[in-house]
Image (cartoon, rainbow, N blue to C red; front, side):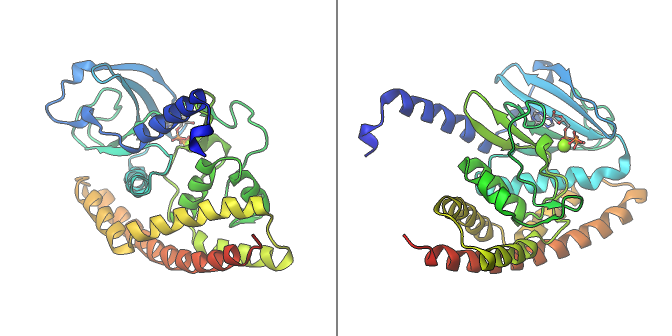
Length: 306
Ligand SMILES: Nc1ncnc2c1ncn2[C@@H]1O[C@H](COP(=O)(O)OP(=O)(O)OP(=O)(O)O)[C@@H](O)[C@H]1O
Ligand SMILES: [Mg+2]
């Protein structure tokens, strides 16, 4: 079957695959203590009200990154979460940006407050769906205003447009992420791929449970089409991979290790500690409900007429 595919399609496919792998295996040479920071050039800036985003180029390895730092010092926990969530993404090759911590008291080009931590993100190709007016696609699983709590048929239909989208949606369910609005989904016209950015609002909602309830209700009202089932298969396989590779005890260990490296001063220790405990509770809760969700999906997929 694969032999009948024209060679130029195979080449395009390989290029797309390589760009995805590049995201998955980010090596962050610029953070190595032996790296000469003179090779880093600031090439852009995207300052928002609450966050500074500075785009830098590693001229030695020809790579682009974003340095992200919150304007308010009490937002430290958001930076830690971005790194944590990125580590989970790496375990299952999810197409979202990779993130590492730039420690406090460490100089790095593009870091605005030297004394505080910042995060370094692989640069995501393409532009946000919002900025290019990409038609329709919306994969947000939590939106109070629009009364979206879990998966909807629209989200499942949009997931069926690309395996990348189904993977990102599964990742958001597993990490209880409620921030996947159209500004935080990028589309790269060159590779036709979708990517997620902005991972901070994770482990805030038990999306595993909300999705379990929404799927049960949807399925009772009407069965899924074959196209929807195909999208749900990718979604469910991605959830299984995330569940196997990220038991809650591992995620909590990673979170503790991150907190340890931050050298928090007294003022923020308490604040971060209570956020960490709340986050751990949500990690465990979401993990258990996602397992239940996978069982439900397996049954639905198995019972779908071939
Ligand atoms: N990894 C990345 N690759 C490319 N651009 C990025 C990346 N991270 C951030 N940006 C750019 O910086 C902007 C702000 O970053 P981010 O979304 O992480 O912060 P934010 O505070 O949530 O802003 P917003 O409210 O716009 O979502 C993004 O909209 C995007 O244009
Ligand atoms: Mg954002």
